[in-house]
Length: 406
Image (cartoon, rainbow, N blue to C red; front, side):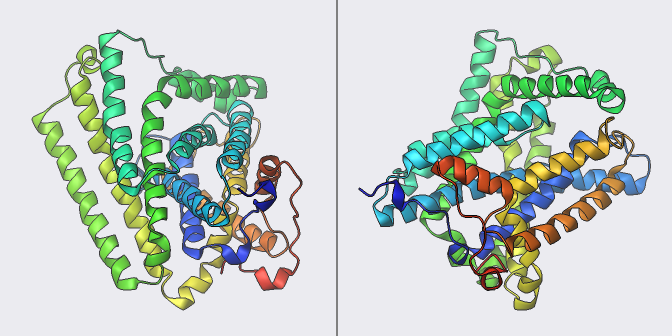
């Protein structure tokens, strides 16, 4: 068995272009969705705002976090396969990576933004390592169990044992603090929201996260993205199939809501079967919608001229952790009271414009940075923590790796 000296970060020439592109796409969607969900005016007042609200609810919401979850599992699968080729046990390194990511996520959630997702990814990723030797069939079975059976058992437990779930913080108080409060009040409100999510929703959401990670690991074992890259006709078929599947899933949900209406508020918590069914079915349009968007971008990347223009998007994909945290810093500065105070004052179209401007700047900065450095700044910290040694930062030959992807 090889030692830790055999561990090395993935070199630029070993990277897979499509994965970086998809991760970059996900970061655009994450920024757009987060601005809509956490900072902007919630009620549309005209047709244009209603249209953007519809896009958020039916096309954007949760799709890009789902894509990131799948790519997380896929990335781990690549690490695992490469480690096996070198005779390296990947567990210790992977657990250190998840531990470092957990520290970054907790700091992010406690001190910057209540909507942190890194904590959830670190916790779920640590569990994913337990499935590293599982067969492809076993991964599919485990993914189904995590999506279907585990939430059902949790809903049954809540009902059978009369478990009290924490109440959400008062929305009026949240809105006042972020639009008028001091930095101390805002920080306290953020910590309250962060702890609320992990005590109320994490037990139900993390199993579905793990299901996505497992599907990504399953796909990596079959080299799915490597095989599909450049196969335009196959990608078009996947995109069309996923789009049709999304429409059918929406139709199924509408049918179920009509045939099985929601009971009164007191009974709703006490109907684990209905809640489980709608919980599972509700993931169908989200995941198929994510697949539609991903396949659509993959189709565009099969055209050489378009692929060249997408290089800055791939650069963002290589710096996704830095991009994510930078989006937080920019967003809270723009919207919270200690910054420009735009919280609750920008409608959906304005949030889209902000998304485009901020993300365009992030693409330009990411492309410039990776011409000179091997990693994004936060990625460098993360890797240095995981490898327990300072990683080389500067490119040896900046021009030869300026694209950041093969």
